[in-house]
Amino acid sequence: MKSLMPLSMGQYYPADSVVHALDPRVKICLIISLAVAIFAIQNLLGFLILFLFLAFVVFLGQLPWGWILRTLKPLRLIIIFTFAMHLLFTSGTILMKLGPLRITQEGLQMGVFICIRLILLLLGTSLLTLTTTPIELTDGLEYLLSPFRRLKIPAHELAMMMTIALRFIPTLVMETDKIMKAQMARGADFESGNILRRARSFLPLLIPLFVSAFRRADELALGMESRCYRGGEGRTRLKALEMSGKDWLAGMVALLLLIVSVGIGRL
Image 1: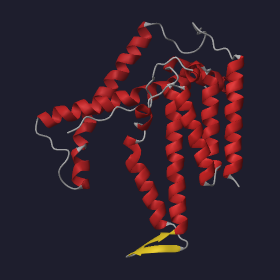
Image 2 (image 1 turned 45 degrees about the horizontal axis):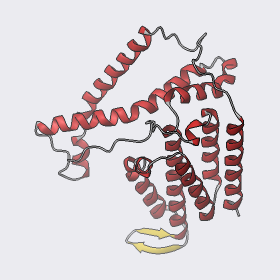
Image 3 (image 1 turned 180 degrees about the horizontal axis):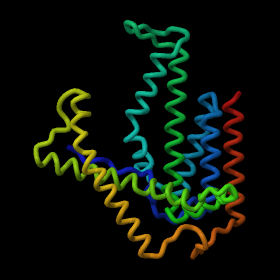
Image 4 (image 1 turned 30 degrees about the vertical axis):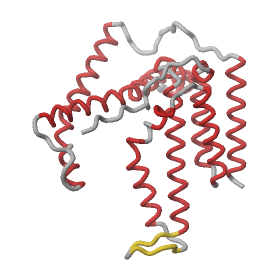
């Protein structure tokens, strides 16, 4: 059995690039704007402009495309299932009949658009995590959530939880791979049989995976406590976030490109 492909989401790819040097607050705001643009566009030309924009960011960030495309592999079944559901169960102009199932023009268009949106959203999210360290991501999220402190919402704790969750996604995938190999060495079979049987064969993985996850969480909590971590109250930073002229310029140019793509995508 092949090893599970490590996820790029949640991992940081070190490089000396313009994208890596940008303020994390700018990158987070642009990702939010990208998500809005993705769901506002209604034609293929707008999606093409967004893809070219993301490809240009990959080039500026000196990122290998292998790392970028890894994000899609674990979710390819979800993308295919989403496309099939829209293709077969959307009413409209019938293009083809497959027994009781009907393929419609509206279903085909909607399925393609939904899949493109999911792919672009995953690529954009990967660019954020690949070019931003977990510490920078936490600081940026905390700063953007700081206005909610007036509503007694713990901004620092929320930012820390989201960053830790992203960080441990690839760790849990690798842990699952190790458990599967250990059980296969003891005679477990994860590849033969139909889909239901293969799904049931993965159930024995859940208990050791949960035990490992809780153990890692306990070790992380002990490590943070031993370093006198007490939340964000009164906490200082070694490097304070400061917006430079390059950050403002990059943010405005990228936002302008997103607005143009939405305008073209709505024609």
